[in-house]
Each structure stands twice: as structure tokens, then as C-alpha cells.
Image (tube, rainbow, N blue to C red; front, side, top):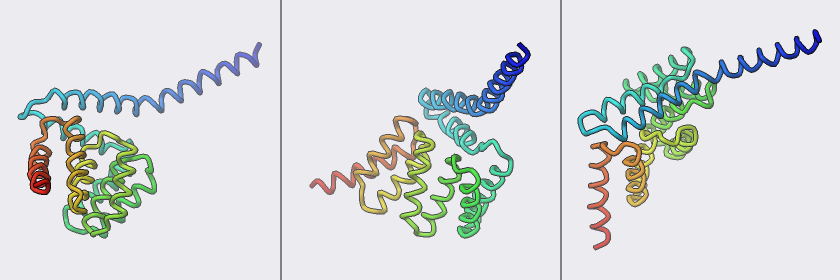
Length: 186
């Protein structure tokens, strides 16, 4: 009976540890789901604030050290130091391979360096980890435009509107592409 009691205690302890470690990720996903719903319901005046709250959630890795690497990479990009940004984002990706924001930051740095192939690879990983990452979709649409693939860019912008229907930036990009595509059809 004692062995059975000890075994039961171990099983219960393991269950609580497993649930305890998954609760923060579950809570973050629940918060994001609610924010995405708010974004769908937002009007032209409120969507930007909801967008920013979503981005703030994306940037929470759960580790202060990883958050610091993300912030340093972002700061380096703002200062125009793409080499430093690539170093910080690469360290972040190495230490937190399931953190989509690290890949998106590095994709941005690669793109600014003119390295389209690595940028595309990191955007692909970002979208695999976070399929609703509308900023990564926007980055991919920009690259499609640069590669003279306006129809693909238009499709990506339309996908963004399914997530973020009030996005003025996306609507403007769609208007420009539609005019461009109509001009090509003539």
C-alpha cells in the first residue's frame, strides 16, 4: 500500500508540474485569441491600439533574457545597425527557437541588408510559429512587391484584412496593387 501511495503522489506531482508549466503559455494564447477577436470587432479609431497590444503579446517570450535580446535587436534596427541586430536576433533564435518574434526581427534585419533568401526563410518560420502574425505577412507582401509579384502581394494583404479588417496601411497597399494589376491587364 505504501508503494502505491508514493506512486500516486509522484503521478499527482508530475501532473501539477506539467499543468503549471503550460498555464502561462495557455494564458498568453487565450489573451491573444481575445485580442484578435477585439481586432476583428475594432473600428477605424480603435484598431491601432489593439494592434499594439497584440504586438506587445507577441514580444513576450516568457524569459527576461530573451526579452532583452529582442529589445537589443529592435534598438539596433532603430539605430540602423543591422549587423548588431542580426547578432542579437540570431542569439535569440538560437536560445529560443520557438519564439516567432526572434525570427521576425531577424527577417527584418536580413531584408534591410538585402538578403532576401534568409529573410524569406525567417518569415516562413515566423508564420509557421504564429500563423496570424500580420506583420510577417506584411513583410512577405513587401518582398513579393520587390520581386515584382503583385498578385501574390495582393493575396497576402487580403489575408491580413481577414485578421485585421480596419488596417488603413493594408487597405492603401491593396488600392495601389489593384491599380497596378488593372494597368497590367490593359
